[in-house]
Length: 320
Image (tube, rainbow, N blue to C red; front, side, top):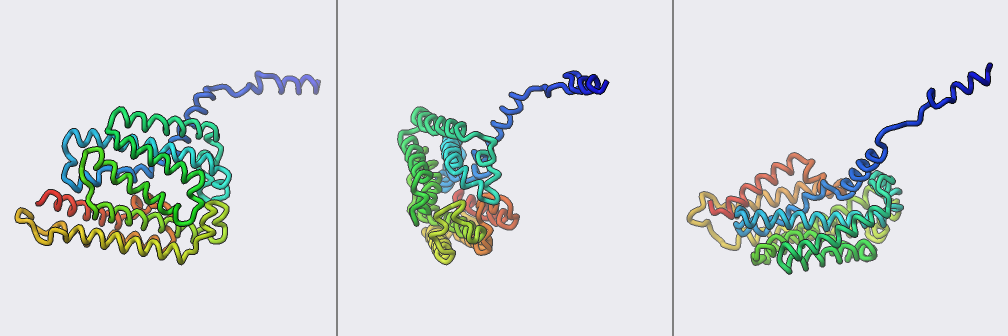
């Protein structure tokens, strides 16, 4: 009797195997993990491609918008390739980090071989598409970006100072590529301000990581044990000063108010730019600028200052 009851309890009718579209669920989970690994929040960095055309007042033609949208997509694909390969290489180290351990590759949501495969495919297809759809200069810059960033993933991120230069150069390339795509000459003040502004944010990010890890830095980014917080503070302070100086020299370059302009918007935009740098420096000084995109998108005061600067910058370019 007892055996019959036990046998009845174990029948498939009582305990059927789970059914349902498991492969579809796994596919959606994998695709979601790949998308998260591509860092959608950091795509805001790629909007730098419009900086040079906007400064030259050549942003609103159909040709310019089409080319810039294409360049934005290609640069995003290249950056995604680098993120995928980087996360695949750093999976073990990321598991020791309090927040990076939630990344899909480190958490096991995206298998390491899949991350390598998708990253490699994007890394090949994006430059090929650029060579076909854009100018050779743009294709060459994208290829150089990929090569530099992959070298960073493999070895350069372990070299003092060079790691800061490589990441900074990646930002500068984003700012250059929009102008190159449209054949716009790049101002020396534009390059100085963009380059040192990027170095400011990169050094502030490293400083914040060093402060937050506090003795555990080597577990997630070995090079942080080689830097001191004092040195990283010096770098971001120096870079912020040069970026502000470069912007002010650009703003004062014409040395007067254009006849068609109601107010000296070019000169007034210095105020908003300096305020934005000072506001961001608050987070850098606190050691909470480890995720620049979250600082830029999450701080309301910084967003309002940015909108004010954008309005004055636009009015200066338009000579209103």
